Image (cartoon, rainbow, N blue to C red; front, side):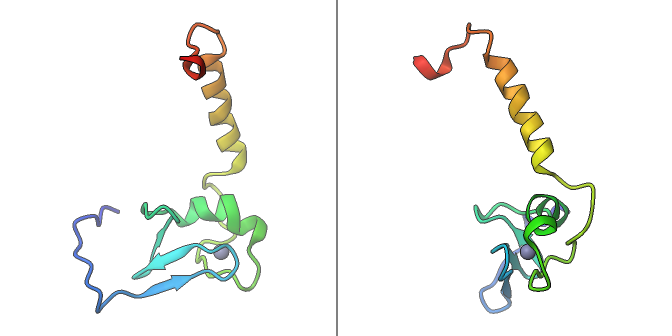
Length: 93
Ligand SMILES: [Zn+2]
């Protein structure tokens, strides 16, 4: 899965954008809007399984096991627990 060293040439670059969720594929690989290399299964769990319809071009649409908002919220809970002791008032420094 590590194709970071691959040289991208403008000539061979193909870009596909999902008309439904706006996800972008470059040369067949999904990238997040931030330009970070994406994960089609995570994208499916977060976006396409909910919002995607026949327009969605994510090949993993409908796939289970990716990141989900439920998981994201649990991560946020952990973040909250880490700071709610009041000792680390990172927001008030
Ligand atoms: Zn999509």
